Length: 259
Image 1 (tube, rainbow, N blue to C red):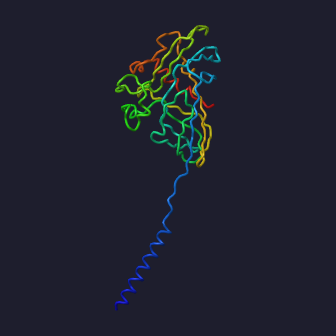
Image 2: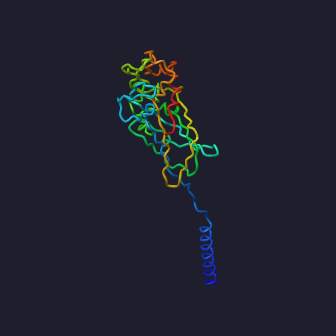
Image 3: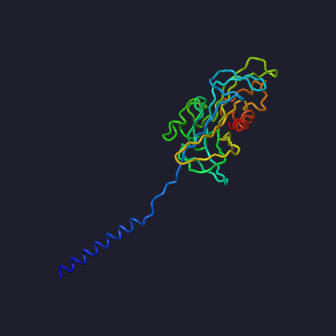
């Protein structure tokens, strides 16, 4: 009787082990979506002149001289448009950065492999990020930059979305010494959407793809009466409610085009 019980126990154990092995081999293998890197390569220009250094005068095609003393802006809310019109939102902190003249390449990592036709983004920060303290643990590297503050402390005015300073010839004949301009564009009302035209590109597994774009700062002055001194400065959150700030905001999408 004892031998019979041992035999039954042994057979039960063997059957149990075989079942486990069968289940393991039939379990589906986890899969991961292949990804690559898209680099937004952003050039700083004054018309067709690429800006190599601050405080250097360049001349536009129409003959107006202009220089940049500072040119930087927040890029956020990046969306990649697929061929079928659907979009991929670049998540989290990977989808926002501060564009400065000294740096041209901004990598967007872990982008799903596929074919895309366009890119959309915002110049500025979403309302939630704009309300954060500059030392916030998740965003301090992005926000703790005094040049992008309206005041100290930062709140309640939020951050400067685009800080552009330099000099420009304001004369009708374009033959005078350039004078100073300074624009600090921000506040939630002045978050700007940019939609680039269609230009097909592909992201391959483990590969790197570039999207080359130009930011032409001369376009910031489209429609602005340069001979009016008041039109050459926007420096506070209150001044961002002015008509000149609205005009500058509306000019920001005009600054971007493909290389």
